Length: 255
Length: 382
Image 1: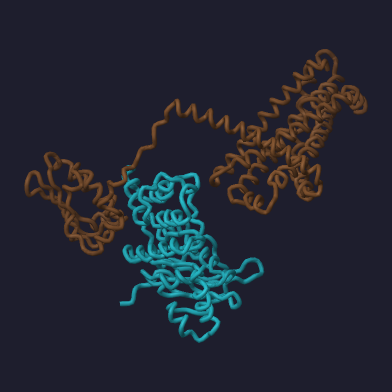
Image 2: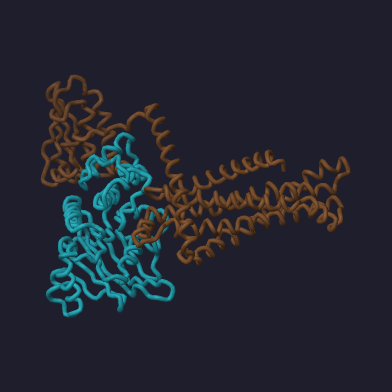
């Protein structure tokens, strides 16, 4: 049985001022899939992410999450939709004045009517899931970059979202830590069945995590390749696309 | 909706032996169902607890389990009051075990949550004293570093960035002129109005001009200007420098061979030193204009005699005294703002703290130094 679709972007067009950033982008993400949006710098992949999570609305087109169009819906439906998605931002975006535990507890306290004494229990479980046991009391400024990503991931997972969006999860991390984050993403996808959407240009992550990938192109402002990452690398008809996947993956090993 | 959720999670509690408790869970034990399910279990469990020695929780009937479900299981375990070894989870399938493993279910007590240590008065007092002492040392070394930077700039005048000075003169001075002017005008109006009510009784209307001119030029002009500039620019200096500090921009300057004091503090210091006395002068003029409005419109004084009376009231010494106070305030504002900026560490909240503390400290210092000036004048015999 084909898994149901979970997220659909339809004919999205984005313009900043006079410059067109995304031109008529359409794709679907299936439930439980690990989907990767890649592209070089300036190809609009972060812009695409910002529109998919509802931070900005496109000039035209739709973002459909769980059969609801995010771009036109009313305030209440939009808020409910936000509970179904979790986002890990590039710099983790932990609130600096709160401890790691308070950061994770933030959405739980706000959106769930949980008895007060249960919040620390679930926060510890969330932190255990990302391998940060016993770090509740630390401030974000006291932990390393990789740990911040983990804490950000725990916060993104706080309400067990259907879809987890990750913006450059391996950016700014050493190869070993980046590999551990990839492992963690795979683990979350397998145990919780969360749909994963990653925006990245790190080829190691793409081959380690990705099941399906789209490649955005700066000149056409559209998707120029679509499919299984290894397949695109080996057999795509456009040599430029193959080069993009290959050349960087060779030099990418040393990072 | 509520009953739907309750139906998704069902449970049965049995006591085959008095000391043994069996809980059978069925359905979904996930985020939506966990809170209400736990509430019901708790209600049912209460009367069965005394004399309990073993609990078996059977989760073979559970279709979906997530970490919120694991939380419920952990909470049931806590509710029975038994040690974790005496609670057995049976019937877990592969998926359940993954979730329980992932959430560290079995090791949950390994890392006890330490409550934050109770504040000890001696420690708090000691820490505060040490921090105050260190802050004082930092202040001294900061003043020293600025002095060194000034000396270096005097030897190599080209090393300072002239463009920055002009920019800061604009933001600190020119941009502040409207607000300084408006506030001073209104202050002049108020002083003239209040004093006229008293002086009218003695028919000494013309002395309103003396009062406004003298009060503004020697005291209120510099102080008002200082407070406005501290609020506008002192906070801006602190916010800008502290943001640069926490985003490592200052480290970058150091590595590129710049002296951060020369690069950041001196342009602000020089700009403030130039424009604050000017602003104080404008403040005086606007306040006298405000006084004149009251004098002419309410006291029927001729404008020219009001102005000449004002001019007579102020001596050159008085004017220079006031303006040099404004210069001192400018130095205080610039140094405090930059110092607080450099002291910031941590995240976004430290920027806010730096700005707040810069304004509070500058205003305090302005008032403090103003009273020092008053004391000096008494001994000077002025």
